[in-house]
Structures are given as structure tokens and as C-alpha cells.
Image (cartoon, rainbow, N blue to C red; front, side, top):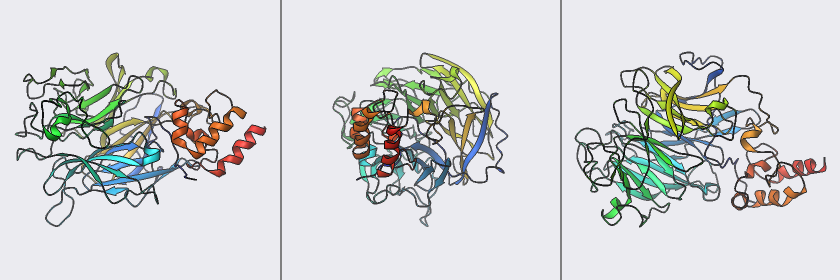
Amino acid sequence: MHRFPHSRATVFSIIILTISSLASDSVAQTVLPSGFEERTIVSGLQDPATMAFAPDGRLFIGERIEGRLRVAVRDHSTNLWTLLPTPFATFDVPTDGNGTPTRHRSSGIRGFAFDPDFLNNGYVYVFYMNDQPRHNRVVRIQASAADPNVADVSETVLLEMPFAAGDSSGSHNGGAVIFGDDGMLYITTGDGWNGGDNVQSLSTYTGKVYRIAPDGSIPADNPFYNTATGNLRAIYALGLRNPYSASRHPITGQIYINDVAGSGKTAIYELAAAANYGHDGYNGIGTDTDAWAFSTDGGGDARVISGGVWVPEDCDVLPLEMAGNYVVSHFGSNSNSTGSISTMVSNGNSTVSDFATNIGDGGRKPLYVTVGPEGHLYYLGSNYENADGRVYEIYPTGSTSSDANNNFIPDACEGVLGDLNCDGIVNAADIAPFTLALTDAAGYEATYATCDAMWADYSGDALLGVEDVAEFVAELLQ
């Protein structure tokens, strides 16, 4: 029987890694609201710039300059994570004359996403700057059948995005990679910095959002499919400055583009077909589209939007007033030693409030923010090009949320262990879906779309298998 790693098949995933030297690792600089605390979860990452959680619960981190995609796995009995020494994959990123990876502006790994059917196919989609010649590329890699923590050596190239002008060498390189509810893959690029390619053109790859199918084919319903040529037919929207990250609303499915644009470099756009967001001046291509909101006025450490995530409304671990908030991280300006995290009320109310300020532990400013399935906030701390990047957790103090299976995820956030048909109780009616979860996790989640196959993980070992059967049966007999 194929054994699946721990699955939490939702858009929210846990961001915690190997805990090392917690007692001595102070992050007292950060100013948090009353009732919240912060701790360092992992240290020693090499120039990290992006992270995401697989549907099976593992944390993947992109070490940008080195071109390494790292994996961390969690021990559900201790809440400790281990950063695996062997990278999941290493990419052909820019190097110096001696073959050593080099910063080369915004080079290296830009972003990545997991296939919606990752539990079955193991596909990961990665956007990185390729070397010789230096250009942007989107590839698909696959977890090895022999070891899911390491990818097969080969990669499938899905989209090549060359620079046309010599100055478009990779600064302001964007980098978001995200799946839409339509099953298509969306990728963002920046303007290439001063003197780069014209973003207000259907003949350049800079300052765009691209939409492709998971196999790399270009959908014929893309808005410029009959206007542009070649791979440029993948253009879905244009007029962006540096769209570093993106998010998808968990209820509406709307994709939001976080663009380092505007006076405070904090523009947030709602993605729409043929939208032109106006960077370098709207020139008549597509639909002139204003920002949905700006996450701050750009003062102090509240500059340069680096990430955003929607707080779930069905996992009430954070204070009730935060449910449905958009939480945004700011890297701060290059001259600022600190960054910040802000909240916006909802997708219908973009009113902004400070949440965490003065974030800059050892010069590590927030480059990414997300929410774990236990409802806590996590951010990636880095100065964008240094060793010893870290992951931090922000959590409410004094939480009393029930955790029946002791896996550090409150029951309210993951359902009831053993309740495989999602009716709120564990009884004989769960036997058939339990069996399906163990033998065909994807089939189970297709049949029980609002449930989670990992509600069968009685052993808490992050795997589904025969070791879970005895405990399930024992509960049925109680």
C-alpha cells in the first residue's frame, strides 16, 4: 500500500522547523499586540527568500542565491521540526566565474507552488533565474517515488522568459507562483529595474502575470492569446513593477497580487484577465486597473510589501476580530533596519492597522507571512541575501483550544480524528471512508471534499497506514 505523508490539504499550512536553542534566541525587538508572543523556530537558513507548505504538511523553503529548495518535516509528538540536510532540489542559478552561486540582483529561486494533486503526483512548480544565459524560467519537478523528500533529477521546462534589454537583468524580478481555482498556474514578473524592458508591451516578459496550464501549454482563453505570439500568449495581465508575492482568498478564490509599487511600495491588486495596473504609464493595452488597496502609507518600517495571507474564518485560534483579515508583511526600505506586519479588515474593507512593528532581529526583516493550520502567524526573517535566515512564529498566549489527538493542531482547525465522513461523530459510518482514506487519499478527498484524509492518522506519525487501524477500531468499540 502506498503510504502518504501527513496531509493537511488546505491552503493554510504549518510554518515551523527544527527548534534549536530557543531559550537563548531572543527576538525582543518586535513590538506585538497585548496577548501575543513570538519565538524563533529555525535558524541557519542560507539567504532564504520564499517558503510554502505542501499539502502533506512539510515546509519547503527556497534558499534564493544558492538555488536550493529545502524541506523540513515535523514530529507530531513533540511539535519539533527537522530541517533535512539534503535539498529537495538544486537549480542552475547564476554563478560567478568559479561556479559559485552569486547574488546577481534578484536571482535564484523566486517562488514555487504545489500541484493541487500533489499527494498523488508529487509535482512542484518552481520559478527561478537560470544561468547561461541568465533568464527567468518556470519548471516542474517531481518528488522521488523512493524518497519523497528528494526530487527526481530531471526537470520539465514549462515557460522560458528571456530578458530583451541588457539592463533587464533581474532586479525587480517578481516571483509569485500560485494556482488559481481554475487549475491554472499564475506567475508574476517585475519590470527588470531602471532601463529594462518595456512592461507596457506584449512583446516583453517583464512586469506581467502569466497564466499557463500545469503541463506548460497556454490556454486559448487567455486574454492576449490572439494578439501576442509564442510564449507571450501566456500573458494574463500587465503593468506591474515588482510583484514579489501573491495570495488567493480561501472563500472567493480571488487572487491578489502584492506589488512593490506606489509611494510606499505597498500596492495590492485584484487579478483580472487583461488588467493593466499602469506601471510606467497605461498605454491602452488591456483594462486600466487601479489598486484594490495599499497596505500602509509607506511610513517608517511599513514599506515594501513582501507577503500577504488571509486569516481563515473557520479556525478561531487568533482573536475573533482577526477572522477574515488580510495579514501583510513589509520588508521596510533598504535604509530601514526593521520591517512590520499589518492587518486589513477583510476583502470588503481594506482599512489598515499595525499588528507587529520594529521587526528586525539581527537585521532579519519579514520577507513572507502565512498562517498555519493551527491558526498561528509565521514569517520568514531575512535580509534577502545573508546566511542565517530564520522562521518565526507569532501566537496568542493562554490558548485553551482542544487538541484531541495531541498533534499541536486544534480540533477546530482540522476536524475530529476518526470522523472520516464529517458528521461530527465517530461511528460505524466512518469505516468505509476510513478504508478509502488509507487506500486512496486523493479519491477520499474527492469524495469527501470538506474533510481531510489525515483525520485517519491516529498514530500521529505523519503517515497513513496499518498502524492507524487498531486505534480506529478501538475507538469504534468504546
